[in-house]
Image 1 (cartoon, rainbow, N blue to C red):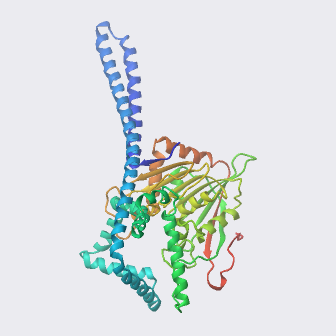
Image 2: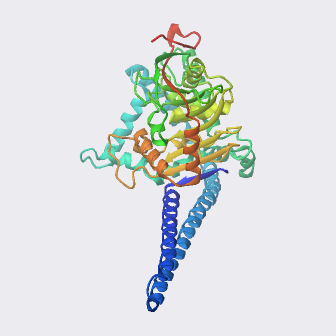
Image 3: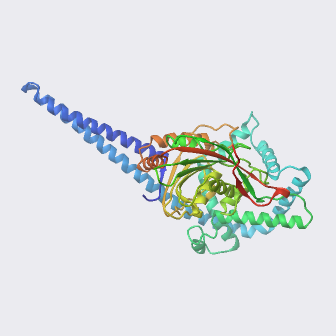
Length: 494
Protein backbone atom coordinates (compact mmCIF):
# COMPACT_ATOMS: atom_id res chain seq x y z
CA UNK A 1 0.00 0.00 0.00
CA UNK A 2 1.44 3.35 -1.01
CA UNK A 3 1.31 6.62 0.83
CA UNK A 4 -1.95 8.41 0.38
CA UNK A 5 -4.72 10.43 1.89
CA UNK A 6 -8.30 9.77 2.88
CA UNK A 7 -10.34 12.96 3.04
CA UNK A 8 -13.87 13.42 4.31
CA UNK A 9 -15.01 13.69 0.68
CA UNK A 10 -13.39 10.44 -0.41
CA UNK A 11 -14.68 8.60 2.66
CA UNK A 12 -18.21 9.68 1.73
CA UNK A 13 -17.70 8.83 -1.96
CA UNK A 14 -16.29 5.38 -1.18
CA UNK A 15 -19.14 4.68 1.24
CA UNK A 16 -21.72 5.78 -1.35
CA UNK A 17 -20.03 3.69 -4.06
CA UNK A 18 -20.21 0.61 -1.83
CA UNK A 19 -23.90 1.14 -1.01
CA UNK A 20 -24.80 1.74 -4.66
CA UNK A 21 -22.89 -1.41 -5.61
CA UNK A 22 -24.91 -3.33 -3.01
CA UNK A 23 -28.14 -2.05 -4.54
CA UNK A 24 -26.90 -3.07 -8.02
CA UNK A 25 -26.24 -6.62 -6.83
CA UNK A 26 -29.64 -6.79 -5.14
CA UNK A 27 -31.38 -5.59 -8.33
CA UNK A 28 -29.45 -8.22 -10.30
CA UNK A 29 -30.77 -10.95 -8.00
CA UNK A 30 -34.30 -9.59 -8.36
CA UNK A 31 -33.98 -9.60 -12.15
CA UNK A 32 -32.91 -13.25 -12.14
CA UNK A 33 -35.92 -14.08 -9.95
CA UNK A 34 -38.26 -12.30 -12.37
CA UNK A 35 -36.84 -14.16 -15.36
CA UNK A 36 -37.37 -17.44 -13.51
CA UNK A 37 -40.92 -16.46 -12.56
CA UNK A 38 -41.79 -15.75 -16.21
CA UNK A 39 -41.99 -19.49 -16.87
CA UNK A 40 -44.65 -19.84 -14.16
CA UNK A 41 -47.14 -17.34 -15.57
CA UNK A 42 -49.48 -17.90 -18.52
CA UNK A 43 -47.82 -17.74 -21.94
CA UNK A 44 -49.60 -14.53 -22.88
CA UNK A 45 -47.97 -12.89 -19.84
CA UNK A 46 -44.40 -14.01 -20.62
CA UNK A 47 -43.58 -10.85 -22.55
CA UNK A 48 -44.64 -8.54 -19.72
CA UNK A 49 -42.78 -10.60 -17.08
CA UNK A 50 -39.59 -10.73 -19.16
CA UNK A 51 -39.89 -6.99 -19.86
CA UNK A 52 -40.07 -6.24 -16.14
CA UNK A 53 -37.09 -8.54 -15.50
CA UNK A 54 -35.13 -6.81 -18.26
CA UNK A 55 -35.99 -3.38 -16.81
CA UNK A 56 -34.72 -4.39 -13.36
CA UNK A 57 -31.61 -5.89 -14.96
CA UNK A 58 -30.96 -2.58 -16.75
CA UNK A 59 -31.33 -0.74 -13.43
CA UNK A 60 -28.78 -3.12 -11.92
CA UNK A 61 -26.25 -2.41 -14.70
CA UNK A 62 -26.82 1.35 -14.43
CA UNK A 63 -26.35 1.28 -10.67
CA UNK A 64 -23.13 -0.69 -11.06
CA UNK A 65 -21.90 1.88 -13.58
CA UNK A 66 -22.70 4.65 -11.10
CA UNK A 67 -20.81 2.78 -8.38
CA UNK A 68 -17.78 2.40 -10.64
CA UNK A 69 -17.91 6.09 -11.55
CA UNK A 70 -18.09 7.08 -7.88
CA UNK A 71 -15.05 4.94 -7.06
CA UNK A 72 -13.14 6.44 -10.00
CA UNK A 73 -14.15 9.95 -8.88
CA UNK A 74 -12.84 9.22 -5.40
CA UNK A 75 -9.50 8.05 -6.78
CA UNK A 76 -9.29 11.03 -9.13
CA UNK A 77 -10.07 13.35 -6.23
CA UNK A 78 -7.16 11.87 -4.26
CA UNK A 79 -4.79 12.29 -7.22
CA UNK A 80 -5.97 15.85 -7.78
CA UNK A 81 -5.31 16.71 -4.13
CA UNK A 82 -1.75 15.38 -4.42
CA UNK A 83 -1.07 17.39 -7.59
CA UNK A 84 -2.61 20.58 -6.20
CA UNK A 85 -0.68 20.22 -2.96
CA UNK A 86 2.63 19.85 -4.82
CA UNK A 87 1.86 22.84 -7.06
CA UNK A 88 0.78 24.98 -4.11
CA UNK A 89 3.95 24.06 -2.23
CA UNK A 90 6.17 25.17 -5.10
CA UNK A 91 4.21 28.40 -5.59
CA UNK A 92 4.34 29.18 -1.87
CA UNK A 93 8.09 28.60 -1.80
CA UNK A 94 8.57 31.13 -4.59
CA UNK A 95 6.31 33.71 -2.96
CA UNK A 96 8.00 33.42 0.43
CA UNK A 97 11.44 33.69 -1.15
CA UNK A 98 10.33 36.86 -2.94
CA UNK A 99 8.92 38.21 0.31
CA UNK A 100 12.26 37.54 1.99
CA UNK A 101 14.10 39.50 -0.67
CA UNK A 102 11.66 42.39 -0.17
CA UNK A 103 12.06 42.38 3.59
CA UNK A 104 15.85 42.23 3.25
CA UNK A 105 15.76 45.73 1.77
CA UNK A 106 13.43 47.10 4.45
CA UNK A 107 14.58 45.15 7.52
CA UNK A 108 17.54 47.24 8.73
CA UNK A 109 15.24 50.02 9.93
CA UNK A 110 12.94 47.57 11.80
CA UNK A 111 15.50 45.33 13.56
CA UNK A 112 16.25 47.74 16.44
CA UNK A 113 12.54 48.11 17.19
CA UNK A 114 12.00 44.34 17.20
CA UNK A 115 14.97 43.71 19.50
CA UNK A 116 13.78 46.50 21.77
CA UNK A 117 10.35 44.91 21.96
CA UNK A 118 11.78 41.51 22.92
CA UNK A 119 13.96 43.04 25.64
CA UNK A 120 11.02 45.08 26.93
CA UNK A 121 8.82 41.97 27.08
CA UNK A 122 11.42 40.02 29.09
CA UNK A 123 11.96 42.98 31.40
CA UNK A 124 8.22 43.35 31.98
CA UNK A 125 8.03 39.63 32.77
CA UNK A 126 10.81 39.98 35.35
CA UNK A 127 9.27 43.03 37.05
CA UNK A 128 5.61 41.91 37.07
CA UNK A 129 6.18 38.21 37.69
CA UNK A 130 3.81 37.38 34.83
CA UNK A 131 4.71 34.85 32.18
CA UNK A 132 5.73 36.32 28.79
CA UNK A 133 2.87 34.58 27.01
CA UNK A 134 0.34 36.06 29.46
CA UNK A 135 1.65 39.54 28.72
CA UNK A 136 1.46 38.87 24.98
CA UNK A 137 -2.15 37.66 25.26
CA UNK A 138 -3.04 40.78 27.27
CA UNK A 139 -1.60 42.97 24.52
CA UNK A 140 -3.26 40.96 21.73
CA UNK A 141 -6.57 40.97 23.59
CA UNK A 142 -6.43 44.73 23.96
CA UNK A 143 -5.65 45.15 20.27
CA UNK A 144 -8.49 42.84 19.26
CA UNK A 145 -10.91 44.73 21.51
CA UNK A 146 -9.90 47.91 19.68
CA UNK A 147 -10.49 46.35 16.26
CA UNK A 148 -13.54 44.15 16.74
CA UNK A 149 -16.95 45.30 18.03
CA UNK A 150 -17.44 44.55 21.72
CA UNK A 151 -20.75 42.71 21.67
CA UNK A 152 -20.78 39.97 24.26
CA UNK A 153 -17.87 37.64 23.54
CA UNK A 154 -17.45 38.75 19.94
CA UNK A 155 -13.67 39.11 20.22
CA UNK A 156 -13.09 35.54 21.34
CA UNK A 157 -15.63 34.11 18.91
CA UNK A 158 -14.20 36.03 15.96
CA UNK A 159 -10.63 35.03 16.76
CA UNK A 160 -11.63 31.38 17.24
CA UNK A 161 -13.56 31.43 13.95
CA UNK A 162 -10.56 32.82 12.08
CA UNK A 163 -7.93 30.39 13.38
CA UNK A 164 -10.33 27.46 13.02
CA UNK A 165 -11.28 28.16 9.41
CA UNK A 166 -9.99 25.56 6.93
CA UNK A 167 -8.60 28.37 4.78
CA UNK A 168 -6.50 29.76 7.63
CA UNK A 169 -5.32 26.26 8.63
CA UNK A 170 -4.26 25.38 5.08
CA UNK A 171 -2.54 28.74 4.65
CA UNK A 172 -0.62 28.23 7.90
CA UNK A 173 0.55 24.82 6.70
CA UNK A 174 2.17 26.34 3.62
CA UNK A 175 3.46 29.31 5.64
CA UNK A 176 5.32 26.96 8.01
CA UNK A 177 6.92 25.23 5.03
CA UNK A 178 7.76 28.61 3.52
CA UNK A 179 9.77 29.87 6.51
CA UNK A 180 13.04 28.47 5.14
CA UNK A 181 12.36 29.99 1.71
CA UNK A 182 11.67 33.34 3.36
CA UNK A 183 14.98 33.06 5.23
CA UNK A 184 16.77 32.16 2.00
CA UNK A 185 15.37 35.24 0.30
CA UNK A 186 16.30 37.32 3.33
CA UNK A 187 19.98 36.38 3.13
CA UNK A 188 20.10 36.28 -0.66
CA UNK A 189 20.36 32.53 -1.31
CA UNK A 190 19.23 31.60 -4.85
CA UNK A 191 15.81 29.94 -4.92
CA UNK A 192 17.01 26.88 -6.94
CA UNK A 193 19.57 26.20 -4.20
CA UNK A 194 16.73 25.75 -1.70
CA UNK A 195 15.48 22.80 -3.72
CA UNK A 196 18.66 20.95 -2.75
CA UNK A 197 18.94 21.97 0.88
CA UNK A 198 15.29 22.52 1.80
CA UNK A 199 12.47 20.18 2.77
CA UNK A 200 12.67 18.10 -0.40
CA UNK A 201 16.47 18.00 -0.47
CA UNK A 202 18.93 17.70 2.42
CA UNK A 203 16.20 18.97 4.78
CA UNK A 204 18.54 21.25 6.68
CA UNK A 205 15.84 23.92 6.85
CA UNK A 206 12.65 21.96 7.54
CA UNK A 207 10.24 22.77 10.43
CA UNK A 208 12.20 20.50 12.78
CA UNK A 209 15.36 22.49 12.09
CA UNK A 210 13.49 25.74 12.63
CA UNK A 211 12.15 24.46 15.97
CA UNK A 212 15.68 23.43 16.93
CA UNK A 213 16.97 26.88 16.07
CA UNK A 214 14.32 28.42 18.32
CA UNK A 215 15.36 26.14 21.19
CA UNK A 216 19.06 26.92 20.76
CA UNK A 217 18.39 30.63 20.26
CA UNK A 218 16.31 30.82 23.42
CA UNK A 219 19.07 29.03 25.31
CA UNK A 220 21.69 31.48 24.07
CA UNK A 221 19.44 34.42 24.94
CA UNK A 222 18.93 33.05 28.44
CA UNK A 223 22.64 32.53 28.93
CA UNK A 224 23.31 36.11 27.80
CA UNK A 225 20.73 37.54 30.18
CA UNK A 226 22.06 35.51 33.09
CA UNK A 227 25.62 36.61 32.39
CA UNK A 228 24.38 40.18 32.36
CA UNK A 229 22.84 39.74 35.80
CA UNK A 230 19.28 39.04 34.71
CA UNK A 231 17.19 36.78 36.92
CA UNK A 232 14.24 36.08 34.65
CA UNK A 233 13.95 32.45 33.47
CA UNK A 234 13.94 31.95 29.72
CA UNK A 235 12.19 29.23 27.75
CA UNK A 236 12.68 26.51 26.83
CA UNK A 237 14.53 24.79 29.68
CA UNK A 238 14.65 20.98 29.70
CA UNK A 239 15.07 19.10 32.97
CA UNK A 240 15.34 15.49 34.14
CA UNK A 241 12.05 13.62 34.70
CA UNK A 242 10.71 10.88 36.96
CA UNK A 243 8.00 8.39 35.98
CA UNK A 244 5.77 6.58 38.48
CA UNK A 245 3.26 3.82 37.82
CA UNK A 246 -0.11 5.05 39.07
CA UNK A 247 -2.21 1.90 38.63
CA UNK A 248 -2.36 -1.56 37.08
CA UNK A 249 -5.49 -3.60 36.41
CA UNK A 250 -7.08 -6.03 33.93
CA UNK A 251 -8.71 -4.53 30.86
CA UNK A 252 -10.36 -5.40 27.57
CA UNK A 253 -9.24 -4.78 24.00
CA UNK A 254 -10.54 -1.69 22.15
CA UNK A 255 -13.60 -2.41 20.04
CA UNK A 256 -12.50 -0.19 17.18
CA UNK A 257 -10.79 3.08 16.28
CA UNK A 258 -13.35 5.14 18.22
CA UNK A 259 -12.66 3.10 21.36
CA UNK A 260 -8.91 3.23 20.69
CA UNK A 261 -8.83 7.02 20.51
CA UNK A 262 -11.09 7.25 23.55
CA UNK A 263 -8.35 5.62 25.63
CA UNK A 264 -5.77 8.36 24.96
CA UNK A 265 -5.08 10.13 28.29
CA UNK A 266 -6.83 13.48 28.59
CA UNK A 267 -4.66 16.57 28.91
CA UNK A 268 -5.53 17.18 32.57
CA UNK A 269 -3.07 18.55 35.18
CA UNK A 270 -1.62 16.04 37.65
CA UNK A 271 -3.21 13.12 35.78
CA UNK A 272 -1.40 10.20 34.05
CA UNK A 273 -0.02 11.12 30.64
CA UNK A 274 0.79 7.57 29.49
CA UNK A 275 -1.44 4.48 29.21
CA UNK A 276 0.11 1.12 28.30
CA UNK A 277 -1.87 -2.03 27.47
CA UNK A 278 -0.18 -5.43 27.45
CA UNK A 279 -1.65 -8.30 25.37
CA UNK A 280 -0.43 -11.84 25.98
CA UNK A 281 -1.50 -13.00 22.52
CA UNK A 282 -0.73 -16.51 21.30
CA UNK A 283 0.73 -18.89 23.86
CA UNK A 284 4.52 -18.87 23.69
CA UNK A 285 4.69 -15.68 21.63
CA UNK A 286 6.01 -12.31 22.70
CA UNK A 287 3.40 -10.06 24.34
CA UNK A 288 2.31 -7.06 22.28
CA UNK A 289 1.60 -3.57 23.59
CA UNK A 290 -0.42 -0.47 22.80
CA UNK A 291 1.08 2.77 24.13
CA UNK A 292 -1.24 5.77 24.42
CA UNK A 293 0.31 9.25 24.82
CA UNK A 294 -1.71 12.33 25.76
CA UNK A 295 -1.47 15.88 24.47
CA UNK A 296 -0.02 19.08 25.87
CA UNK A 297 -1.15 19.83 29.44
CA UNK A 298 0.76 23.03 30.27
CA UNK A 299 0.76 25.63 27.49
CA UNK A 300 3.15 27.92 29.38
CA UNK A 301 6.51 28.82 27.88
CA UNK A 302 8.42 28.31 31.13
CA UNK A 303 9.09 24.76 32.34
CA UNK A 304 7.25 23.70 35.51
CA UNK A 305 6.81 20.26 37.05
CA UNK A 306 4.71 19.20 34.02
CA UNK A 307 6.82 17.58 31.24
CA UNK A 308 3.90 17.65 28.76
CA UNK A 309 4.46 21.38 28.18
CA UNK A 310 5.47 23.83 25.46
CA UNK A 311 9.15 23.21 26.20
CA UNK A 312 8.69 19.55 25.32
CA UNK A 313 6.56 20.54 22.33
CA UNK A 314 9.41 22.55 20.81
CA UNK A 315 12.17 20.10 21.63
CA UNK A 316 10.13 17.10 20.45
CA UNK A 317 9.22 18.84 17.19
CA UNK A 318 12.93 19.61 16.76
CA UNK A 319 13.80 15.94 17.32
CA UNK A 320 15.74 16.85 20.45
CA UNK A 321 15.73 15.30 23.94
CA UNK A 322 12.38 16.45 25.34
CA UNK A 323 11.21 15.68 28.86
CA UNK A 324 7.99 14.07 27.65
CA UNK A 325 9.92 11.87 25.20
CA UNK A 326 12.20 10.59 27.97
CA UNK A 327 9.19 10.05 30.23
CA UNK A 328 7.35 8.01 27.57
CA UNK A 329 10.42 5.84 26.88
CA UNK A 330 11.03 5.32 30.61
CA UNK A 331 7.40 4.27 31.11
CA UNK A 332 7.61 1.81 28.20
CA UNK A 333 10.74 0.20 29.59
CA UNK A 334 9.29 0.05 33.11
CA UNK A 335 6.17 -1.64 31.67
CA UNK A 336 8.37 -4.44 30.33
CA UNK A 337 8.49 -3.48 26.65
CA UNK A 338 11.63 -4.89 25.06
CA UNK A 339 13.11 -4.85 21.59
CA UNK A 340 11.24 -8.05 20.70
CA UNK A 341 7.72 -6.87 21.60
CA UNK A 342 5.41 -5.57 18.84
CA UNK A 343 4.15 -2.09 19.78
CA UNK A 344 1.36 0.12 18.48
CA UNK A 345 1.79 3.82 19.33
CA UNK A 346 -1.29 6.05 19.65
CA UNK A 347 -0.99 9.75 20.45
CA UNK A 348 -2.88 13.03 20.42
CA UNK A 349 -1.16 16.34 19.69
CA UNK A 350 2.21 16.29 21.52
CA UNK A 351 1.61 12.60 22.16
CA UNK A 352 1.48 12.09 18.39
CA UNK A 353 4.86 13.79 17.95
CA UNK A 354 6.30 11.53 20.66
CA UNK A 355 4.81 8.43 19.03
CA UNK A 356 6.40 9.36 15.68
CA UNK A 357 9.76 10.20 17.27
CA UNK A 358 9.83 6.91 19.21
CA UNK A 359 9.12 5.01 15.98
CA UNK A 360 11.78 7.05 14.21
CA UNK A 361 14.40 6.12 16.82
CA UNK A 362 13.86 2.36 16.18
CA UNK A 363 14.68 1.55 19.83
CA UNK A 364 11.48 -0.49 20.07
CA UNK A 365 9.71 -2.75 17.57
CA UNK A 366 7.07 -0.25 16.48
CA UNK A 367 4.71 -1.71 13.89
CA UNK A 368 1.96 0.91 13.86
CA UNK A 369 1.69 4.63 14.63
CA UNK A 370 -1.72 6.32 14.89
CA UNK A 371 -1.73 10.06 15.53
CA UNK A 372 -4.57 12.56 15.94
CA UNK A 373 -3.97 16.27 15.56
CA UNK A 374 -0.17 15.95 15.55
CA UNK A 375 2.45 17.90 13.50
CA UNK A 376 4.27 14.87 12.07
CA UNK A 377 4.13 15.72 8.34
CA UNK A 378 7.90 15.80 7.97
CA UNK A 379 9.01 13.22 10.55
CA UNK A 380 10.91 10.59 8.54
CA UNK A 381 10.06 7.15 9.92
CA UNK A 382 12.15 4.26 8.63
CA UNK A 383 11.30 0.57 8.65
CA UNK A 384 8.12 -1.40 8.16
CA UNK A 385 5.87 1.01 10.05
CA UNK A 386 2.31 1.88 9.09
CA UNK A 387 1.45 5.48 9.97
CA UNK A 388 -2.12 6.73 10.13
CA UNK A 389 -2.37 10.49 10.68
CA UNK A 390 -5.89 11.64 11.52
CA UNK A 391 -6.46 15.38 11.09
CA UNK A 392 -9.31 17.88 11.03
CA UNK A 393 -9.42 20.62 8.43
CA UNK A 394 -10.06 23.15 11.25
CA UNK A 395 -7.09 22.01 13.37
CA UNK A 396 -4.02 24.23 12.99
CA UNK A 397 -1.74 22.06 15.18
CA UNK A 398 -0.86 19.46 12.47
CA UNK A 399 0.12 22.31 10.14
CA UNK A 400 3.03 23.20 12.45
CA UNK A 401 4.83 20.26 10.86
CA UNK A 402 4.68 21.92 7.44
CA UNK A 403 3.40 20.38 4.22
CA UNK A 404 3.23 16.59 4.19
CA UNK A 405 6.07 15.12 2.13
CA UNK A 406 5.40 11.38 2.66
CA UNK A 407 8.80 10.67 4.20
CA UNK A 408 8.10 7.28 5.78
CA UNK A 409 9.43 4.20 4.02
CA UNK A 410 6.44 2.20 5.23
CA UNK A 411 2.78 3.02 4.57
CA UNK A 412 1.37 6.44 5.35
CA UNK A 413 -2.33 7.29 5.40
CA UNK A 414 -3.61 10.77 6.16
CA UNK A 415 -7.31 10.86 7.11
CA UNK A 416 -8.80 14.36 6.93
CA UNK A 417 -12.33 15.51 7.58
CA UNK A 418 -14.20 18.53 8.86
CA UNK A 419 -14.90 18.39 12.58
CA UNK A 420 -17.24 21.39 12.64
CA UNK A 421 -19.09 20.94 9.36
CA UNK A 422 -19.38 24.69 8.85
CA UNK A 423 -20.70 25.34 12.37
CA UNK A 424 -19.45 28.47 14.16
CA UNK A 425 -17.14 27.42 17.04
CA UNK A 426 -17.77 28.57 20.60
CA UNK A 427 -15.38 31.11 22.08
CA UNK A 428 -14.78 28.98 25.20
CA UNK A 429 -13.10 26.34 23.01
CA UNK A 430 -10.12 28.17 21.42
CA UNK A 431 -9.05 25.20 19.26
CA UNK A 432 -12.28 23.30 18.55
CA UNK A 433 -10.80 21.33 15.67
CA UNK A 434 -8.04 20.06 17.96
CA UNK A 435 -10.38 18.81 20.66
CA UNK A 436 -9.78 15.11 21.44
CA UNK A 437 -13.52 14.49 21.83
CA UNK A 438 -14.07 15.53 18.22
CA UNK A 439 -11.27 13.22 17.09
CA UNK A 440 -13.03 10.39 18.90
CA UNK A 441 -16.12 11.24 16.82
CA UNK A 442 -13.95 10.94 13.71
CA UNK A 443 -12.84 7.54 15.00
CA UNK A 444 -16.48 6.44 14.89
CA UNK A 445 -16.69 7.48 11.22
CA UNK A 446 -13.48 5.57 10.49
CA UNK A 447 -15.06 2.47 12.07
CA UNK A 448 -17.96 2.78 9.62
CA UNK A 449 -15.84 3.50 6.53
CA UNK A 450 -15.56 0.96 3.74
CA UNK A 451 -12.31 2.43 2.41
CA UNK A 452 -9.97 -0.59 2.04
CA UNK A 453 -7.14 1.20 3.86
CA UNK A 454 -9.31 1.90 6.87
CA UNK A 455 -10.78 -1.59 6.81
CA UNK A 456 -7.20 -2.91 6.91
CA UNK A 457 -6.44 -0.60 9.85
CA UNK A 458 -9.34 -2.03 11.84
CA UNK A 459 -8.24 -5.56 10.95
CA UNK A 460 -4.68 -4.93 12.19
CA UNK A 461 -6.05 -3.46 15.40
CA UNK A 462 -8.17 -6.55 16.02
CA UNK A 463 -5.28 -8.91 15.22
CA UNK A 464 -2.81 -7.17 17.54
CA UNK A 465 -5.12 -7.11 20.57
CA UNK A 466 -5.61 -10.80 21.23
CA UNK A 467 -5.34 -12.54 24.59
CA UNK A 468 -5.40 -11.40 28.20
CA UNK A 469 -5.03 -7.67 28.74
CA UNK A 470 -3.48 -5.60 31.52
CA UNK A 471 -3.43 -1.80 31.54
CA UNK A 472 -1.00 0.39 33.47
CA UNK A 473 -1.16 4.18 33.86
CA UNK A 474 1.96 6.32 34.28
CA UNK A 475 2.48 9.81 35.66
CA UNK A 476 5.65 11.78 34.84
CA UNK A 477 7.00 14.93 36.48
CA UNK A 478 9.92 17.21 35.86
CA UNK A 479 12.67 17.34 38.46
CA UNK A 480 13.48 21.02 38.84
CA UNK A 481 15.73 23.14 41.03
CA UNK A 482 18.19 21.46 43.39
CA UNK A 483 16.45 18.11 42.91
CA UNK A 484 17.29 17.99 39.21
CA UNK A 485 19.61 15.00 39.10
CA UNK A 486 19.19 11.93 36.88
CA UNK A 487 15.88 11.01 35.29
CA UNK A 488 14.44 7.53 35.57
CA UNK A 489 11.30 5.42 35.87
CA UNK A 490 10.12 4.08 39.18
CA UNK A 491 7.66 1.25 39.75
CA UNK A 492 5.49 2.27 42.67
CA UNK A 493 3.66 -0.55 44.47
CA UNK A 494 -0.11 -0.47 44.34
